[in-house]
Amino acid sequence: MNKQLQQSVTTQLANKRIVILGIGITGLSCARFLHRHQIEFAVNDSRAMPISPGDFKHQFAENTLVLGQWDNALIAQADVLIVSPGIDITAPAISAAISKNCDVIGDIELFCRLSDTPILAVTGSNGKSTVVSMLNYVGNALGYRVQLGGNIGLPVLDQIDQEKVDFIVLELSSFQLETVKSMKALAATVLNLSDDHLDRHKTIENYGAIKQSIYKNCTYALYNRNDNATKPNECYINSQQLSFGSEPAQIGSFGLAELDGESHLMLGDKALCTLAELPLQGVHNALNYLAVLALGKCAGWDLTAMLASLTTFKGLAHRCEVIETNDGIRWINDSKATNVGATLAAIEGLSPTLHGNKLILIAGGDGKGADFSPLTQALTKHVEHLITLGKDGRAIASLRLASQADKTSHVDSLSAAVSLARTQARVGDMVLLSPACASLDMFSNYVERGVVFIKSVLVNKERV
Image 1: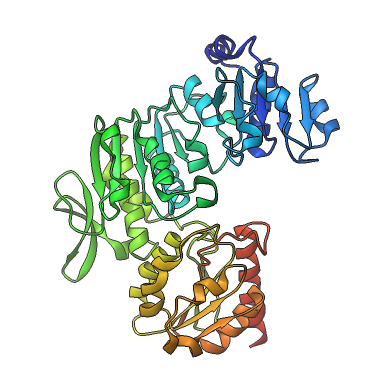
Image 2: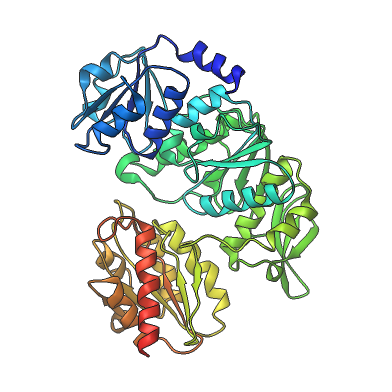
């Protein structure tokens, strides 16, 4: 065990009353970390059986476990409250019990207090997982020891004891950023901002302020010129700023430009490569590539080597994933598009690749209180046939013009949506599952939704 880390943990946490709220993936990683470093703690979860009490006792000896409700007395006596990101600490049942002197943190905050590994931090409403996975892939391909964590991969406290690494790439959700105070990222970015999680954050202004907090104390602040809400506000002007965007860029920033009839990734006025040379297509993926190159540049990585490694990155499952069939139809699984901005990016990014063929969109699910109206123009302009399903599917369908009513359908299941799409699609057409909604009204998560879509496409294919 790292002796310096053990000393830091002991100095910061020993003899304090520590309560972990939530015993899901993050909470368990916090419990393992504290137990590994001989720090006593208690766990409180409002769910009746998120973990077997017997299993907990076997793993964590005499540490306390309270299940079935929020224990106000336990929370009130905490010196340190380590909150899992899925738990809303502003909920009255929790907030009323927290002592004014309590240190309320999450696992990311604890990691930042204990580790000096340079951080490349990424947030945004859409594209986070693609960008951080690409960045991790590129960094390791260049020979650096790079870890991936945060809202993806192995929890950070399960990695902190590992052999020293050169960089850690963090995907950070708004829920995680709520409890981050001490992070001093080498480079940080807000990729984009659109309505999401407003059932928890209430307003887009509050949501945006939480996202912007990623810039606090960072060395380089990277923003998206196409989305003014990502530009660091006056609170964060001390960082060195650079940007990326879909139009030509000034010297030192990244952009796109048409040269000899082809779209190129650019650094200032320098052409880096054509978008056609890279495996992920669409303007939204071009912006992802630019963000990766900019973050890597901030870390001191070689641009030429980064470009070479990007040509072999094949993308993420359930994110504009092509389903291989032999029917001549382009079936695209974008189940990870759980909000309006993600679906808008997919439609606008993929439409230029249609070359006169039709786009059939399958959308709907639990909108989490989002405003669907930003989809209106894209649905009217690009979508030939709209198929909706789920809790808020009809709300999306209502955005269509009256003249498009005969090309708008609502179904009861994803398999029915695939069957209907097949009757509408011809060779060369694209069928895009991009729900603009969470999946929890019909599925356990977006992964299950994507798997059901893939299976439905392949089963239908076999029947043709």
